[in-house]
Image 1 (cartoon, rainbow, N blue to C red):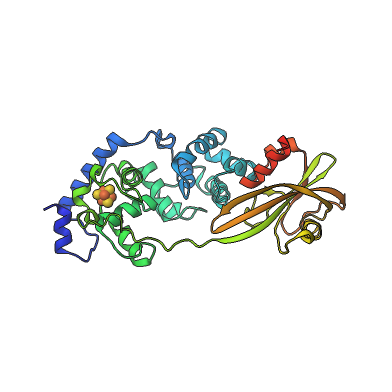
Image 2 (cartoon, helix red, strand yellow):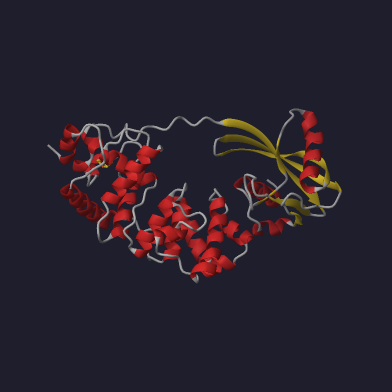
Length: 377
Ligand code: SF4
């Protein structure tokens, strides 16, 4: 009988405890597997705390394949905490453009300034001090402290949550306090005394490559004899599935207002969906039909920018998703009629030539509109 099957039969209500022998087996097998299977990722080529930090923030809610190029460009352009702190926000957001969740970039920028002001430009090596910085929670603090500084700090992110939940066979809700407490305790209890950096990365790598969300590859897993979910045949049922996401349909409009060859941009205010990014005047469409095409465009553009425009034809329609919204975005052309572009409610409004659009951080759909302007498609 495997260790896991024994644990399952002895303790059907799982507590997440491993014996000392099991912990040793787990550490040894996991580290051996990682030595053979670790991917060559750009942020793994050094243990520079700045690189570890940038990669961990980028990897939140974003796939490794997407992050690779962004990471390399970001650290090439802004290679140190000091350079990041000294950069203006527009440049930071432009480097982040397309990664989404732009709050991460603004917090990263704020944290860099705090590190320079309070820590002489060096990231602290202590979990509690790291957690005082904007955008660094328990997981990110543990990742930086363990990977960059070798501190004995546990980590828990999407891949390790799934892996540990299956290993201990936890059938409850991992998002609830009880589940989180159990998983953090488990993550802490299995940490080795040495090689913590490798160990934590190995946990994430195994979760990402082998203990996948659907159809985990248990036959290739170095921890298969320790895994309660596998012993019980529950690897596809654990963790418990999240409730299905329900989507809300939205209809929005973006307006490309032109004046003497330039177009009107506004910077999104804090509290808006793309706070800090620049955008064409954009709003939720409240009315439908031909009346919308004139009156609502004129009123909303004037409200957002102070400019009166004469709406023209539809440029294009873009369908896209943002979090739980499915959005149909109609992009209209318009000509300037009157009024001064005025900055209101924390936003800046500016006339920009098409060639300057490359300097401004835009949302993904904003960039598609910008490309249409440049190419005429
Ligand atoms: Fe995940 Fe399967 Fe390995 Fe268990 S045996 S940890 S379910 S891959």
